[in-house]
Image (cartoon, rainbow, N blue to C red; front, top):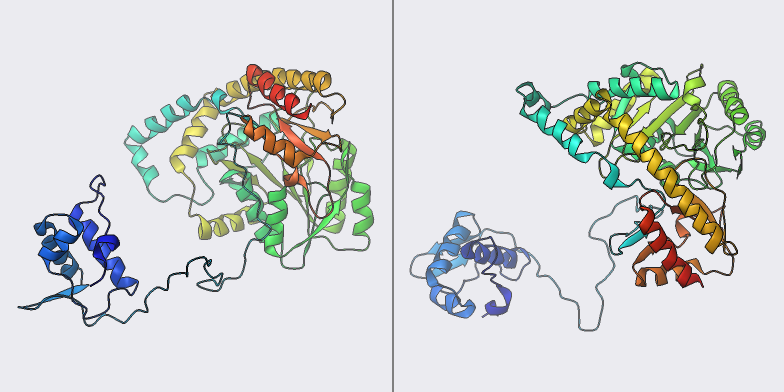
Length: 487
């Protein structure tokens, strides 16, 4: 007889009834080949004694097993595994001291070997991230109030039905009004699609623009998730140098004379990771080149709203008169990363195609959430949030940079960013960043090890150091821990 006592484990504190637990355990033994067709199951009294539960519970489990078609009762003989079930080879357990084989259960094509690594910041009390907003400043209560208000209204029940793949018309209209007033981007709501953050926009654009072997120009240092998205399509990455004035468009022009480029991905405002801003001269030249060589510009403007020292340059999309720009933005990055709301603007036909593609992977977004955000834009709460956050982040940036100058002057080289939520910090070559990151974690502080920003063309002893998600007291404490570790 099989060792049922060890094979059937009962948890009396589980929400699942005992007889269902027994039934499920027996099904598992049948489906893994331990019990075969026509095998006799122990009598109810015997099995009850073996696993220490009431006999009636076993009877109920057997009845359920029979009702589900896994077993049959033969009069005066007992309960048997259904004879008509296919024979399943029993699961071979690994030999003691040997690891399981590495053979895959099925064949699949894309292993995502270059997939962006996850950053685990949850295990430490403090985190110097790569530039996240402080979710404590976000008016989440007001957002949820609008969310509940919509859901309570009679017409709100319509939001529980399927909607359009472009997203909430109310939010698209609100975003158009906001972009027109703050960034000079004037497009109709029909030319906007709401996405799950900016990353979905990058993915949709890459799928529509690029084919295997096409070339996309990106920064020498660049947002790694964008690089991986382009590689996933099969595109080749052409690295363009980044300096204090942003992407080197003169270098790009020389390449265009001898090589066809399908698209240019650029973060002209607070470039990721270096935080530099592309000059207006280079922006105008890029637009001219796009018109001449007929390539698309994917403009990732993920944190335009946070600029501190002067009026920010208008986006490429606001001065694009030839419709070469696909403009991508994010509310997640300025409000709360977990609330996945972004947007993509482009030519009408392109946005329609993006909506059709979006339906294949994600039928639509969260219409209730999108309409709740639309109301925050309409009643001015988003604008108030941006003003409040901008003031707080500027104060935090100033404090963060003051401490870097005074306590890390011979260790970290940096330039105070004009905007954004992070500092690009070049560490002294003598500092082992992975070791520093490891020691910081032991002291309750998460900080990156620098590997995230490296690629096949760029490797520096540097990283982004986010200041926005920490308040003043936390900044002092976090940099104090870092200073102690480095010294």
